[in-house]
Amino acid sequence: MAHYALIDEDNVVIDVLTGRDEDDLVDGIADWEEYYREFHGAAGCKRTSYHTYGNVHYDGKEPFRANYAEVGGVYDPDADVFIPPQPFPSWSLDTTTYTWVSPSPHPGVDVTFWDEDLLSWMVWDVDASEWVQYTADS
Image (cartoon, rainbow, N blue to C red):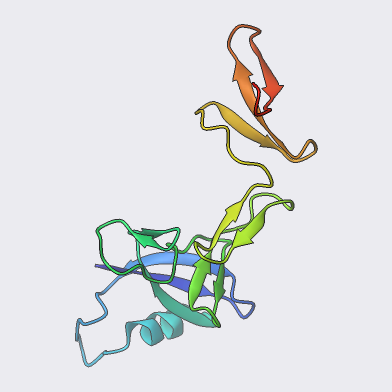
Protein backbone atom coordinates (compact mmCIF):
# COMPACT_ATOMS: atom_id res chain seq x y z
CA MET A 1 0.00 0.00 0.00
CA ALA A 2 1.33 3.43 -0.95
CA HIS A 3 0.11 6.97 -0.39
CA TYR A 4 -0.25 9.66 -3.03
CA ALA A 5 -0.75 13.42 -2.83
CA LEU A 6 -2.95 15.12 -5.39
CA ILE A 7 -1.60 18.57 -6.22
CA ASP A 8 -3.24 21.62 -7.80
CA GLU A 9 -1.65 23.94 -10.39
CA ASP A 10 -0.03 25.99 -7.58
CA ASN A 11 1.58 22.84 -6.07
CA VAL A 12 -0.79 22.92 -3.09
CA VAL A 13 -1.77 19.47 -1.78
CA ILE A 14 -5.53 19.08 -2.25
CA ASP A 15 -5.92 15.45 -1.15
CA VAL A 16 -3.90 12.49 0.07
CA LEU A 17 -5.06 9.01 -0.85
CA THR A 18 -4.09 5.40 -0.31
CA GLY A 19 -3.33 3.52 -3.49
CA ARG A 20 -1.29 0.82 -5.17
CA ASP A 21 2.36 0.23 -4.44
CA GLU A 22 4.50 1.91 -7.06
CA ASP A 23 5.78 -1.43 -8.35
CA ASP A 24 2.31 -3.05 -8.71
CA LEU A 25 1.47 -3.82 -12.33
CA VAL A 26 -2.32 -4.04 -12.72
CA ASP A 27 -4.15 -3.87 -16.04
CA GLY A 28 -0.97 -2.59 -17.67
CA ILE A 29 -0.72 0.43 -15.36
CA ALA A 30 2.90 1.00 -14.42
CA ASP A 31 2.86 4.70 -13.41
CA TRP A 32 0.48 5.11 -10.47
CA GLU A 33 1.27 8.80 -9.99
CA GLU A 34 0.13 9.47 -13.54
CA TYR A 35 -2.88 7.17 -13.20
CA TYR A 36 -4.16 8.85 -10.01
CA ARG A 37 -3.46 12.33 -11.44
CA GLU A 38 -5.57 11.59 -14.52
CA PHE A 39 -8.28 9.65 -12.65
CA HIS A 40 -8.84 12.50 -10.18
CA GLY A 41 -8.28 15.31 -12.70
CA ALA A 42 -5.51 16.88 -10.61
CA ALA A 43 -2.69 19.00 -11.95
CA GLY A 44 -0.19 16.63 -10.35
CA CYS A 45 0.24 13.56 -8.18
CA LYS A 46 3.27 12.52 -6.17
CA ARG A 47 3.87 9.52 -3.94
CA THR A 48 4.42 10.36 -0.28
CA SER A 49 5.82 8.37 2.63
CA TYR A 50 3.62 7.90 5.68
CA HIS A 51 6.76 7.19 7.73
CA THR A 52 8.70 10.34 6.80
CA TYR A 53 8.65 13.56 8.82
CA GLY A 54 11.31 16.22 9.30
CA ASN A 55 13.39 14.54 6.59
CA VAL A 56 13.70 11.41 8.76
CA HIS A 57 12.20 8.01 7.92
CA TYR A 58 10.95 6.39 11.11
CA ASP A 59 11.54 2.82 9.94
CA GLY A 60 15.25 3.60 9.45
CA LYS A 61 14.95 3.78 5.66
CA GLU A 62 15.87 6.64 3.38
CA PRO A 63 13.55 9.64 3.99
CA PHE A 64 11.22 10.23 1.04
CA ARG A 65 10.22 13.76 0.04
CA ALA A 66 11.03 15.11 3.53
CA ASN A 67 7.50 14.91 4.99
CA TYR A 68 4.26 13.02 4.58
CA ALA A 69 2.04 15.25 2.47
CA GLU A 70 -0.71 17.21 4.22
CA VAL A 71 -3.78 18.83 2.69
CA GLY A 72 -3.01 22.54 2.47
CA GLY A 73 0.72 21.90 2.41
CA VAL A 74 2.90 22.47 -0.62
CA TYR A 75 4.94 20.27 -2.93
CA ASP A 76 8.24 21.95 -3.85
CA PRO A 77 9.21 20.49 -7.23
CA ASP A 78 12.72 21.99 -7.14
CA ALA A 79 13.62 20.29 -3.86
CA ASP A 80 11.22 17.34 -4.51
CA VAL A 81 9.79 17.66 -0.98
CA PHE A 82 6.47 18.17 0.77
CA ILE A 83 6.24 21.16 3.10
CA PRO A 84 3.47 21.19 5.72
CA PRO A 85 1.18 24.23 6.00
CA GLN A 86 2.85 27.18 7.75
CA PRO A 87 1.27 27.32 11.23
CA PHE A 88 1.93 31.04 11.84
CA PRO A 89 3.30 33.91 9.71
CA SER A 90 6.25 34.41 12.08
CA TRP A 91 7.54 30.85 11.71
CA SER A 92 10.37 30.15 9.26
CA LEU A 93 11.09 27.12 7.12
CA ASP A 94 14.02 24.91 8.07
CA THR A 95 15.33 23.77 4.69
CA THR A 96 17.11 20.77 6.21
CA THR A 97 13.99 19.22 7.78
CA TYR A 98 11.41 21.10 5.67
CA THR A 99 9.42 21.82 8.82
CA TRP A 100 8.39 25.15 10.33
CA VAL A 101 10.34 26.61 13.26
CA SER A 102 9.01 29.10 15.80
CA PRO A 103 10.98 32.30 16.46
CA SER A 104 11.70 31.08 20.00
CA PRO A 105 12.50 27.54 21.14
CA HIS A 106 9.69 25.35 22.45
CA PRO A 107 9.72 25.26 26.27
CA GLY A 108 9.73 21.46 26.30
CA VAL A 109 6.52 21.00 28.26
CA ASP A 110 3.31 19.43 26.97
CA VAL A 111 0.72 22.07 27.85
CA THR A 112 1.61 24.95 25.55
CA PHE A 113 0.34 26.99 22.66
CA TRP A 114 1.89 29.61 20.40
CA ASP A 115 0.65 33.21 20.75
CA GLU A 116 1.31 34.92 17.43
CA ASP A 117 0.56 38.40 18.83
CA LEU A 118 3.21 38.02 21.52
CA LEU A 119 5.49 35.88 19.31
CA SER A 120 5.89 33.61 22.30
CA TRP A 121 4.96 30.25 23.72
CA MET A 122 2.33 30.27 26.44
CA VAL A 123 2.52 27.65 29.19
CA TRP A 124 -0.05 26.59 31.76
CA ASP A 125 0.89 27.71 35.25
CA VAL A 126 -0.65 25.07 37.50
CA ASP A 127 -0.24 27.12 40.68
CA ALA A 128 -1.90 30.24 39.24
CA SER A 129 -4.36 28.25 37.08
CA GLU A 130 -3.69 30.47 34.08
CA TRP A 131 -1.70 30.74 30.87
CA VAL A 132 1.55 32.67 31.22
CA GLN A 133 4.09 33.80 28.68
CA TYR A 134 7.08 31.49 28.61
CA THR A 135 10.49 32.92 29.35
CA ALA A 136 13.69 30.96 29.72
CA ASP A 137 13.49 31.74 33.46
CA SER A 138 9.93 30.31 33.90
